[in-house]
Length: 367
Image (cartoon, rainbow, N blue to C red):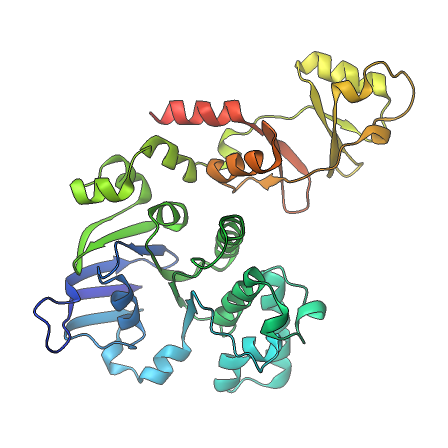
């Protein structure tokens, strides 16, 4: 889908190329992460794809076309672009921001309106609530979602993302990363993503290109980067606790187990029996549709003989889904001060349970 053939970028008056004889092949639907220290050439590499920077020599192909033969404006209208600062137009509404590229491409008003609503729903912002607002009315995380929606609005086959989550606090950053991976499961765009954070690269990437002084030092899967760094530079970039970093690659669906559960309308004695049978001090509470509505601790109902389970429900502080990494599940446990977290599907139906014990076992199995 994207191919670099012996691409070099050397700025006038410099002795060392910013990008030096780079060869890359990024397949359709992959997220390729460019990672490395400041000045390594990763942003220059990305900007050459949409011709914001022209290569000194070599060729870049997008979907089989030599981009030097494509009008730069036409090229950019077919490539989504998300940056750290987001770059929303402050005087425009959210709807107008998202509509920018479709409008440039000559879409009719009705088609644009439908697409804006579709994109807002995709990034989980209610169109009725957010369509008419302006960027100043949104939080940083919400503005970042709008930035992604705008980049996707004209359905480009390729997206470029330059440190898109770098300015956010760690919790918001992690959740937006997860949301973006959820969106990518649906849209399967070919994405080139720049970051200086190796943990983000491991979590987000299908392939990782580690760069140093304009060269590709290693171009591999996250698993290979962690297990077989090609030299000391990559090893130092990855850092210690490589086994723990593998938790970014293991999903909750791979390590969860069945959770003890009971209907909210069940009698307390039934809940006690289920907990006794499964050897647990907690039980998930579901409704008639299997949706998780809360949980109950044994001590909440010990000594009580009447009433229904639903009368003693503890509210859910957080849940995860099956695609959440074990690393993020562990973070959620720390945030709420619990040793477990429930796994649900997109409709909040109970799927299972992840415990700290399960995560430790996953690390041990990967060793």
